[in-house]
Length: 143
Ligand SMILES: Nc1nc2c([nH]c(=O)n2[C@H]2C[C@H](O)[C@@H](COP(=O)(O)OP(=O)(O)OP(=O)(O)O)O2)c(=O)[nH]1
Image 1 (tube, protein in one colour):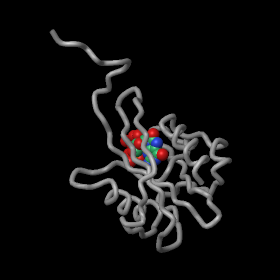
Image 2 (cartoon, helix red, strand yellow; image 1 turned 60 degrees about the vertical axis):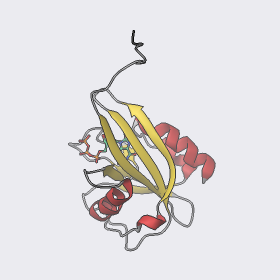
Image 3 (cartoon, helix red, strand yellow; image 1 turned 90 degrees about the horizontal axis):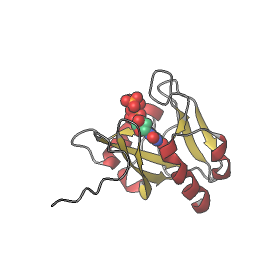
Image 4 (cartoon, protein in one colour; image 1 turned 135 degrees about the vertical axis):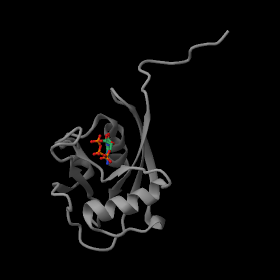
């Protein structure tokens, strides 16, 4: 006899996304606004994106930060911080969040997105995806 261990919603797929909190010298964190046309448009998020087949989460961030913000980071500067594991209506999100304090180049929104440097205590002023809520609380405690 088998036991059904499922609890609550059972998503069809798990999506693996990698995200980073860039932290500046004043301990502020960079957030970016999801553009029109994307899911969860208008919400503020940590830079990053889906991990493509054959990529590690670190490789995905090196690629995404170049594509989205025009900056160069090195994998060794990515410090694992925490992760989100959250069930949306149509998928389950697994998202490691790294901290990064060192990068090369000027932050330049490459896709027309709004970006903001925000003190951790003020992150709650910006609507973020529900998966990010516990991450924000941890950043507030840590930074
Ligand atoms: N980059 C990033 N994505 C996040 C965060 N929180 C959160 O729920 N997500 C979700 C939103 C998206 O469903 C997914 C990231 O996908 P993506 O940004 O690479 O791809 P996309 O815009 O094409 O996504 P989609 O429109 O296909 O959903 O992770 C976050 O803090 N940062």
